Each structure stands twice: as C-alpha cells, then as structure tokens.
Image (cartoon, rainbow, N blue to C red; front, side, top):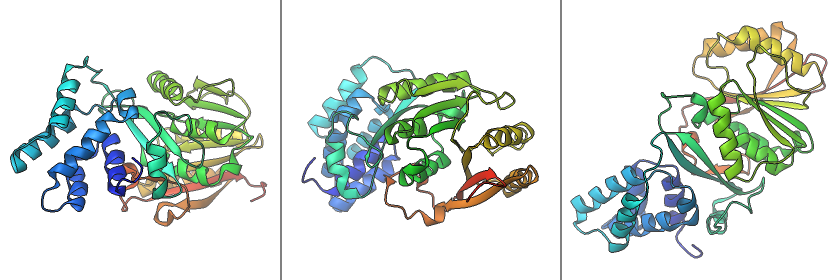
Length: 334
C-alpha cells in the first residue's frame, strides 16, 4: 500500500471494523465525487485481499453484498476482481454465525498506516504502534456482553498506551477483561504479570482465543474466572477495569473488593462511559465512604495524547462522556 492515498487506509480500517456501507461509499466519493464506484471497488478488493483479512475474515459477505448492490444500482457495472472476491467468499465454508472478527490499528499518526497495514501479521506490533484483531460476538444481546467491544475499553487502552510506566514491569490485574484487548496491550508494553479476570466462562474462553491470535500468551499472562464476591486471586501493583459500573446492583461486593486490593498496596484505574449519572455518582460516593480516594485523570473530551486508535468507530461518537479515575487508599501518594 506504499504511496497510496490515505483514504485507502481509512477505507481498510473502516472495512475491518465492518462500518456501514454508506460510510465506505462516502470515503470513496472523496476520491472521485462523480463516480466513486471504481475507487470503492478497488479499495474493497484490496481490503478483501489483505493478508489479515484472509487470516481472520471479519464476516464480510453481508457488507460486500450491500456494496455490490449499490454499484449495480448506481453504476450498473461490477468490477471483475470484486465479483470474483464475492464468489470466493460464497464458496468458502460457512463461518460460525455467532462470531465475527474486527481489526483495530493504533499509533502516533496517520502517516504510519501504510507501514503498519503492509504487514502480513501482527508480529511487529508494539505499545507504540500496531494492530489488534479481536473475535467478537455478532449480537451483543445474545450470550455475554464481555464478547462485545466497548468504548471505555478503547479509551482505557489509549490511556495506558500513553502512560506505559503505570504498568511496565508491574503486576497487573484486570476486572472484567472482556475480549482481551487490554491484556494484549499489557503484554506488549511489558507488564511483569498479567491476570485477566471475568465472571463469565464464555468471555474468558473468547479472551484466551484473542490472546492466542495476537501472540500475547506466555507464562506472565493468566486468566481466571472470578466473581467479585470472591477474594483477589493474587497480589497486584495496578488494577484496571473498563465499563464495570453500568449496574449498581454489584456495588456492595465490588467496592469491598477494590478496598481489599488497594489496601495491599495497589492503585486502580477505572474507566467508565457515563450513561446514568446517578449510578456513577453512587459508585463514587461508596468509594469515598470506604476510605478510598478517586481522582479524575482523563476524560474523552480531551483525547489529545499522541498514541490513539485510528479511525476507531467505538470512539467516534463525540457526545459520549468517558472518564478515567485513579483510585487509591487515603494515605497513598498522589
């Protein structure tokens, strides 16, 4: 992809995230407003032939069908290469309808996209730039919500990518590890120990799958099914969690667990998409009543750090309010 228009990289990243056909068409029309069909078909064919797409197909049959219908309706001619790609997809063995793959790219600037997206694997990925492929649930209302991508998870990941000193060389524990994205990044940053926990067995199984395909397994990485009513599996230096405050019902067991972990010498970074302000304020009130300090350290309206997820759909909604709090014991040094 060297020397290609940056829009080619944007279309690829949106394609990998299964963006809406209308958005892919809009990007193609920026290159040729009069007839975007040629640019669209060329870009989509490049997406389909990319090694990462072939290695972890994102479930593109429905998306590709919609794009082909647009071309046929508006311009009447479908390129032979794209038609062959579509036929090839139809002839492939049926994928598990429950799952899909999405690939995300992070780095310091858009100019690195050509270098990153030329790679056939994720082996060159680091904490400064790279790609992450996640197997996710096709339907967030079926099965565990931990198998879905959540905005707060991406925002917390960006915060840690831009503050690697918080976890490098330290033992990290994650509550509600979900699809495993943060665990993958912790391994790339160089955390000394990584314990990824979740209360749902299916979520942990999927997390292990994602660790494997991103080459983030090893003796330093472990997973554990852990209800919040249980005791912490091991001592940690830093606790991480994203989007665990949407329901106040488990707060009576969650807050004591946090107190127990932090009193052993750890600090915590909790990232929340604030949907119900009353629920969020209740958590902060319980935290203060338990003797912990909560300090706001990042907010999505000021996402001005250098390392970011590029063309990241979960973070594209500017109206959502996402915040990271640092939790510590009252006597901890800030």
